[in-house]
Length: 402
Ligand code: ACO
Image (tube, rainbow, N blue to C red):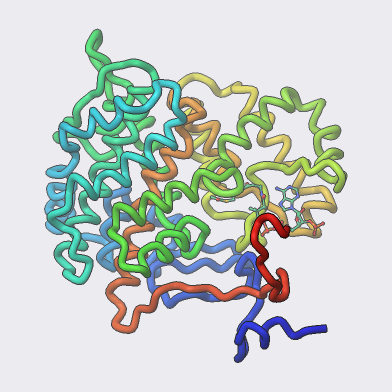
């Protein structure tokens, strides 16, 4: 046998860790997760307290700048974000280049990547002020772009931001207002959306955040890096899980069919998974899932949908799974996505937009992590190694001799 690593000059030691199950790729002071205990803290604050005592812009300030804002800092920060909610008028032509029936995540990936073509006055990544302007632009413009993607999809006119509204109320209005009738803000629903944003804001080195860091490590601009993060988030094992969880609940249809579904999940030949369950890091109840279940309850109460069959089905499915040896022995618990699809549907958000909402929330996590990385003095380009398992050297012959 030939030692292929020597053959190609691959000497020295490196770890082989597919899926990065046990490799830390960076230092970070932003988010701490204790997967065994089911704890999530941002800059030292437990997510349960942030969800109750803060709003999404508080969390944005916290992640980006290191602490919760006081009243004066909050006013300044909100004003700054508000100032940047408009997108360049040319952006609408970018949207109009897409087919109307394009998946909104495809549109969002393209449009966020295109921001670097419109806002190239702040792309010096070595200048902290430029980095901050890009971060603010991204946080401010994402709701506008997500709402535009929805309006374009449904053939409705774009709605411009109304900056006297809060971040989440502004987004709800851009999504759901139309020129034919007055749009009334419902505080319970706005608060529910804000909580979805808080709960999805950051989650340390998940696949999309690692993608943003890797893209950023080459010196790529922040808009391009966040577009890469959005592309990664789209996958069903990551940001697409709430859509998949809702589809799964609909497929199960009624509580009597739960045992048969669980049987399929346990059958290793079937490849059926209980979507919205399990997590690479949490081996306990995801703390965000508890908060999301509460929000789900509040929203359904507000809308007079207390008997919503999907919510009842989800709670029954959770109860059965948590008592089942298969899930108990593998430490599989509901994750944040188990209930977030039901909440979003109740808010009137169509399934195809769920991952865009996730992207809107996670943008602050991506940009805060990117900024943290770029600020480090000895930052290196990310360059994983491989274990080569291919051909040994052989001769390439001219085509007539092959
Ligand atoms: N349903 C059924 N079985 C599962 C599930 C599930 N949802 N998740 C894991 N398992 C099983 C695996 O089949 C495996 O069983 P085995 O030991 O008999 O082979 C065992 O539990 C360990 O699972 P892994 O796949 O090794 O766990 P991993 O950390 O790689 O995967 C993941 C985590 C991708 C989240 C997985 O649990 C999953 O696919 N869940 C469903 C999708 C989902 O909800 N994703 C959202 C994640 S949270 C987020 O992105 C916000």
